Image 1 (spheres, rainbow, N blue to C red):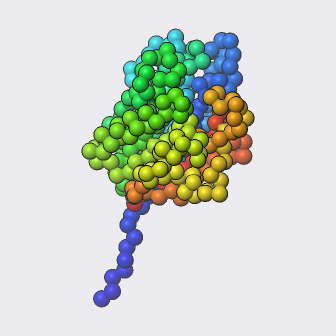
Image 2 (image 1 turned 120 degrees about the horizontal axis):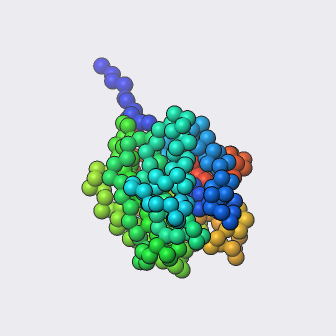
Image 3 (image 1 turned 60 degrees about the vertical axis):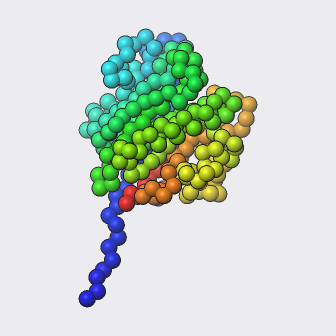
Length: 290
């Protein structure tokens, strides 16, 4: 008797990473005017998430007005941009969990941090500083958010959402501390591991090679588009990179050997695929999970 071989069961998820630029797309003297002028960005981002059915979203440079009371849990303030996007999705009947924290004061009037949204349950939410300096008044302070996403038919997908410093301002120490933090959480029963966000580590340079050099993590954009290795993840001149040509500094890294495979990796919010909403483009990754 012959038996048909069966493929292992799999499912697909989509993950978006996007630096929101801390309300600086339309800066105004009055913060409430600034938030009002960002209504198109809130709408366009929420619309893309809803229309594309994105499962997990990682935001960096999430702005919240400095003089608003700090909510518990953090980020439920009506001025928080990730909260505004989540609430817009809820108004449309799309339900997302939200975990976020803040690092420092950005542009003199915003709490600036990172946020993770997920359609699936979030377990073991955590945040921690990876920078040596943890002062809220130092814009070089770096706090990361982490969560174990409970993906149906797969298990726990560990997502670390980061916004790291430039090479000369602590990147190497921050990334090494991040690695220790991620390894300390593997006892939670994690089956997959992604590090996502704005690394300030240009493709091909020393800081980038520090991530991929030992082959522990794989650059998912390069995995699918090796011929576009140096394609920038922003256009024009942005904070921190004013004296150089645009570079690729935003990434989705997957731990090598984990049972998920990238199937698509598209640049989004670049005017060709949804309007520009920030000084960074976004990346939309689609994974098959086994």
